[in-house]
Each structure stands twice: as C-alpha cells, then as structure tokens.
Length: 243
Figure (cartoon, rainbow, N blue to C red):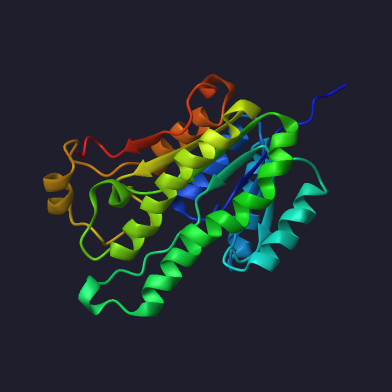
C-alpha cells in the first residue's frame, strides 16, 4: 500500500519566493497546494510545471484577509486530506515614511501579513494536531529584525509574526509540530526589484549580493523535513551576513 504524500500549503505561492518554496517542497516529495490571491492563472501554471517535472501540485485562490472565505477554502482542502506543512508566505509592501503614512497603508499591510496568518493558521492547527506531526513556517523579513526606513507598517506586521511564532511553538511542541520563522534579507525577486541599487546592496550586505529565492526555499525545505524535528520557536535570518 502506497503511503500518501504529506500535503503542504504555501500562501502567496505564485510569487518569487513562494514559487521557489513550492518547487522545493514538491521536489522533496510533498503534494503542494499553491495559493494565490487574484492571480490564480499564475499559480495554476506553476502547478502544471511541477506536475510536468514529476511532482504533485494544485492551485487554489482565496483572499487571506477574508476570514470567512479563507475558512471555506481551507475546509474544502481539508476534505481532501490533512495539511501538515504550512508556509505563511503571503505579504505585501506599501512603503511610506511614517509621518506621511496613510491609515489604509498601515491597515492593508498588517491585514495581509498578520490577520492573514491568523485566518489561515488557526483553522489548520487542530487538524494538524490530530495528525501528531506538522511544520508551520512563517516567512517574515530582515525588516522585522533590524527595522527599515519607510517600512514601519511592514516591520510591525512581520515583527508581530516573530512573537506569534514563539508563542505558538510553545503551544504545539508536545504534539510533534514545529513553528519557525524565516527572515530573508534582500532577495532577488520581482517584489524587491528596483528597491535596492547595486551600491545599496554592496553597502548593506556583507556578501555584496542579493540572495536567491532558491536559497530561501532550501532553508524552508529543511525546516519542513524530518531532519528539523528539534528546531522550533526560532527566528532564522537568511540575509548574507547583515547584522
């Protein structure tokens, strides 16, 4: 009898880092559910690419800020089987210096990263506990560790995820579930393109280059594996040596 593959949900899975994470988890033998908000076609194309490469994947679309719609979408996924790996990768930037920041910019950024974390993770926690095995990995940012001008909203949202990571890790540790945060620095993706010049990167990053999405994905893949069973409640930076 064939053992079914563990199933992984990657929110924001059609973006640069999310795409690399989805491909890494599929290559590691998981059935990957690639989440998108409005760009379902991109997630579907990625799922088809993974299947063509011999993996298992599907695409799904819902708004993580809509608690009711998220709950309905997650229940439909749970009806197909347990989700034991969750990568909370969805997030947005709306940068502005704080004196000029609009209320909507503050609210939208926190809504996606922080409320989205709750809306997705909370419904999946008890089903994960029942399986006695799980991995929850929150993708945050160097901005949550060091701060960044123009990103008080983003830093606040991702910093709150660090605190949530540590607290949730304590609650589920005895159930075979680990909870960790991965805090990337400057990563070469569409989301960061144009945000930092070569001179900026040379000045800020000791390794003098941006990171690759695949490097973040490799770390996530390790944390999602059996080999990382004793790592939990940690904030792991991947930033080329930034302090």
